[in-house]
Length: 274
Image (cartoon, rainbow, N blue to C red; front, side, top):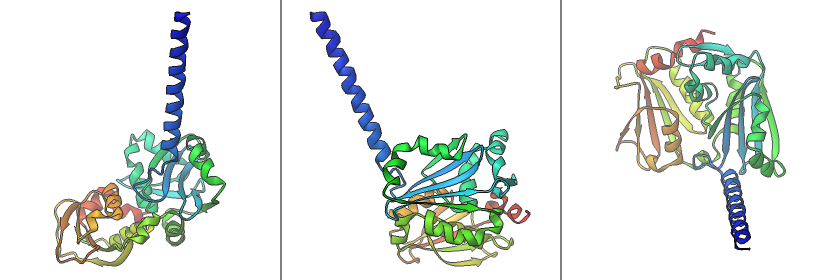
């Protein structure tokens, strides 16, 4: 009898611990795990292409963005332009999976909370089935399809990324970005400004300053209260630059200075060689 009670007690304990782990897992999945923002974002590398997903309770939207198989994306760092359907295989073959984050930023101005490497794009719903199912019934589902190469679709992305994929809470912060191109290569400041606008930042000016020099690849100067903002956390997770507090800047002001080293690192000129 005592032996039976001991076995029964262990079984009850195992069941209780199992239920606790299930509840804990559900809580972690339901909890919004974005960078303290209101949206949950997924970047997907799959055999059938690249995709973006944004689940936004505030917008009451679940947005997805896909590309046609032959639409080309730019792979920074020297690999150049490749068809959407070939991107996952390329990064694996070249052992460059670490470029995935840069791929999504420099093509879409998109900073995901999670990067998923999958067999099929739609498999994300199975991996995040609870988050998707809990929200799908009370949100609008909308999908965008990019037909052409990214460089030819930037005007469409100006609309789609800001409207559907930018971080909602960034719009509530009074951060103002100025972007300076320190190289003699045309277009770099506007290229970077567009990506930060797609993230959700307000870019107030772009300019070339070839007579200015900075150490390393790039420099960020910032004014009061910037380092306490959500935007600052997103910047630090997106781009690696030297940082310098500048008392001459107003509250919420940020200045980016991009050098020749930065252009060489991402191989920016190849963006225009499509």
